[in-house]
Image (cartoon, rainbow, N blue to C red):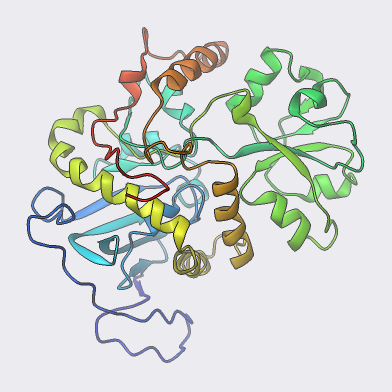
Length: 382
C-alpha cells in the first residue's frame, strides 16, 4: 500500500490519513555543482535506519527529505526528493527505511547483507560494526553523533548520594537495562556488579515507576528524562543520568557502506557526505519542520512508541548541551580514530567473551573513513 503524504498537484482535504504536507517545488541545485548529485549518485539513495523515524539517531537524514513524500505504510519507508541546505533539489531521491521493530529487530549491518539494494545503513550503535567486523564488515563514512546518547538513569530523591554510574556500582541498587554491550563492559570492569544488573528491560518506564525509583534503568539522554518528567503522570519529576559514553566510548549512529561498494560509491559519497553534514547543522538551527515530519511518519507507520513535539525539541536541546553531534570546533561527522581504537580495545574483549569474535587485527581504518568529510562544516557554520 502506498500512502502519498504530498504529491505534485494534490489538494489535501484532511481525509482519512490526516497528513496535510504542503507541496512546494524545490529549486534545482546548480548543474554540476557541489549539491547536484544526479551524475554521481544512484537515482534513489536507499538508507536502512535502526529504528522508527526520530531526531536523535537519524534526524539529519530526515532533514534531507523534500516535502513531496511517498510513504509506504506497510514497508515502513519514505521516499522523497533529496534536498540540500536551502531546499535545493539534488536531482536524486532519498529512501529512508525504518528499522528495529519494523524489520523484526534485525541488526542494520545484517540487513545490509540481506538486501543489496541498500546503499547506506545506520546502526543504532557504532559498536555493531565492531561486533560484526569478521563476517559482515561495514565502513562508516561519517558519524551522525560523535557520542552515543545511551544513559543510566536514577531517582535523585531516592539516591541522593549517587552522582554517576560508578556511584551506582557502590550500592546494591538494581539496574534494569535493555541488553547492550556497554553493560557487559561495565560489569567486566567492576564499575557495576554482575549481581546488580538485570537484562530483562524492554525500554518501557513501567518497572522504574512501579518500583518508585528504587531501581536504576537504561535509557537515552535525548528523550527519556523529558518523557519521565513531562509525559508520565505516574512519575512526573526529574531523573538524573550519566552517559555510558564516559566509560565506553561508543560513537552514535553512523552511515555505513559495505566495504566492497566503496569504489563504486566514492564519487557519490564525495558529494553526499557534505550534504548530510550540513543537514545535521541545519537540523540544530531549525528543527521544527523535521520534528513535524518525524511525528507525521511515525503516526503513519503506527510506531509502537509515541513521539511528541516536546520530545523532539528536548532531543535537539540535549544534542547541543551534551555536544553529541560534534565536539566544539570539530567538523560535523568526523571520526576521532584514537577514540575508535579505544572502543576496539574495550569492546573487543566483550564480544570475544560472548563468543562473537571480531576481525583479527581490526583497526580504525577497517571501520571508518574521514576522506569524504568537509572539514569546514561545523556547528558554528561553514
